Image 1 (spheres, helix red, strand yellow):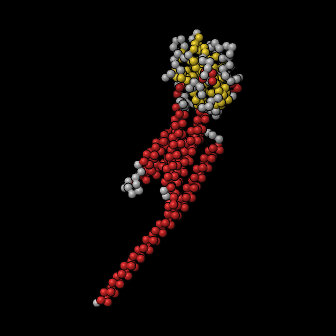
Image 2 (image 1 turned 60 degrees about the vertical axis):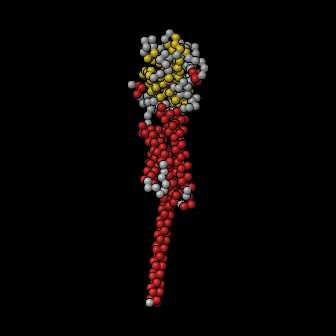
Length: 370
């Protein structure tokens, strides 16, 4: 069934609350499309390509509506300003298949079409209305969203001019928010907690820096997670299961960490050891899953290589800093232990000598008295 078909790309169109899903096939210059828009059962929807201009004039259009027999149907018609009376007529490019569906007050058009001149950058128009003439779609409102429902779409990248809220733009926001929060701030916060605490002069500053860094990462990460949920809800038919599932796990584990901070026992509490183990395991798990999911996001978004390389450079740099600090702090800890051990040994020797001296003095005094 067309409604269960998966598509490569999707765009939330800026007008009429509509969505367009598509898969481009370069081997035969065709594209599979699914156009969806809110509509009542007594209305119609339409989606069109305009091979010669932008806007409605010259738009090669596919209409979907209920016919007089109460059956969902699709017809095609090339719209011009001089001839707007819709009737079923062929278009200038081939349509290999088309169908339509109505469910939950949403109408959908499914089609496989030939791209005019195999151009992957196309002018498209979309529309909806409840006006009919002789049982055929007839007109729409001449103001507002109905006259702004046109854009130029790049079928390869998903970029759309005339769409201030394009899907690609929101994907980029989603990627940046999550890379900065989960992928950079979280590891920095962990590095602060693990290594700064070794330096006595940094106590308690390291703790407040750690909390500030992780809380900032969580807040920004929740914003990124929210944009991901919105992208998912607007992408019916397109799913990235592993990326989504890891994202949900990250949010859940990070939320547990926030609540764990509120339940943190005092240092001398008998449960503090178990809290530390829990906190460290969850924290490092979040960081590992974050890095994995960011690279999955790169595969989905497929940006220019420089962005992926930049993130790799950041992770390698943070890893190098962690390795260097690991060696330095271990050296400090071992030196401190040797110093403490030597001091204890010195104190113990002095204590024994003192006792011996007292005993000897006492013995001498006793001998003299005797």
